[in-house]
Length: 290
Image (cartoon, rainbow, N blue to C red; front, side, top):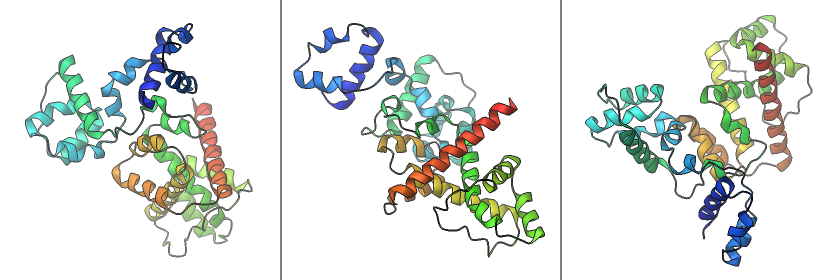
């Protein structure tokens, strides 16, 4: 049996024969039985993997579907949009110039459309998300795109901190502070009270003219790079799903980081720790405000 088949069998055993799974594995060829014993999967919902394609397609940013919908006849594309999240459907309708159709799909039609779209987008070599090994960064998959964009901007604040330490002009500081969102400003003050290691090249602000939007673009690009270098050693399965939470433009920037030369293990370790510290800071702030 191949790896995917063994993993799927493990899920079925977890679901239906958890207490007596050894009785079933004993019937397998020795090679398969030994391989199955090494698989550490607690997941026990086979339905999610086998049939919940609508959930799968909803995980992918709409920009990845644009090339697919442009090839589908307009009258078919208009109703296939119904299986995507509302925001994604509206964006694709605009980008691909798909006419609006007010139609309620039957369960069979929804299943057909979502299955079709998933088969167009999936990579057969990639494991189902439920099978991807867990790491310290796996929790990033639980965040929405909007939350991840917020995290990316906050990551850029790490590098802004070092620049702020050396700004003595009060007007310059005021321009920086006014460019930040409330949470980013709080995180900046938090970082200023910490002794974070400088692990990346300095953020250049010599050419900054005080325009808030330009500063935010610099911080966002720096945050994307930090995120890319932090996750580049994760499994190809994790990376496949993760980059598709973003638009194809940001995904390309992340993937560029994956292809860059290997960074020292110590540097990547520090980048990961800073990312985890930031997420922890953000989560605590979110809990306090609930």
